[in-house]
Image (cartoon, rainbow, N blue to C red; front, side, top):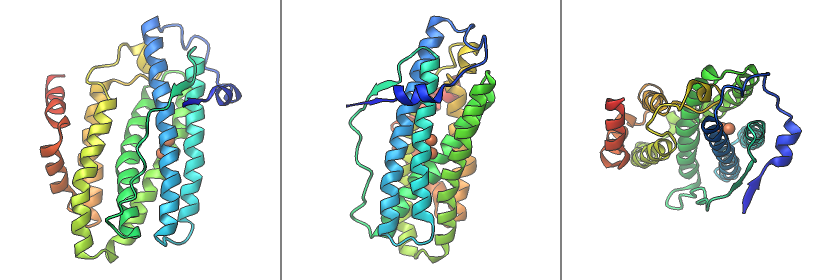
Amino acid sequence: MSLDLRGAARRADLRLERGALDELDELDRASAILTWRGRMLNEHVSARVFTALARQLERAGVRGDRPARVAAMVAEEWLHADRCAAVVEVLGGSPVIELPALPPVPEHEDADPLEAVLRNVISVSCLSETVAVALIDAERRSAGPPALQRLLAEILADEVGHARFGWRLLEDLAPSLSPALRERLADYLVIALDELATHELAHLPARPSPSRAAEAIGVCDGLAARRLFFATVNEVIVPGLQAAGLPALSAWRAAQEIGVWASSAASARYTD
Ligand SMILES: [Fe+2]
Ligand SMILES: [Fe+2]
């Protein structure tokens, strides 16, 4: 099965300013197409994750407008996928990608519905979306064509909302979490932080951007992005979770001890 967003890309009718692509050589263009096609797939995966999360929130009895807000996030992620598809097309690529076998969104059957959904909200909003905010903001600042800056600013505004959703929910629920539940969430955090680092570092090559022109069109400097990833975990995610009463600092240390990514990431950090 493949994800084919040619129709959406055409409807978006994205136009970059004249000359925006002139400085790209064929290699830059090819890596930009790969980058944006990969983002298109990531956005599709995010839509799928929020679809499951909306259902899990309802099942856990989380009241108010939260399930509806998560449903709205699904639509935002679809729109982001369409936007990324439009960039692929403007670069001369085809916004079609083979869908990999995607693992199911975890149901955490060893936990009750509230604990299960809390694990996923932490993993999705407080970890992944928070990292996305930092990375997309950096890309927006490096983007050259104003139309691309605007497109990234729109996506960024939504991702900020997706991250904030989880932080607010955690803040609201934190005072009522029992010590036993906190302890189990602390164990879960080790796994979630290890998975986060494994996933992000697999997508952030330990090399600089091929050229300034490529960077201006969205091909990130992998080394800078890796540094930003670690800074976000250390300065935003860990302190935020600690403030909610979860021992995130020790969980992050434990994740760094078990993570197979840790040694290569450390050498990449110190040799750039
Ligand atoms: Fe998104
Ligand atoms: Fe998102």
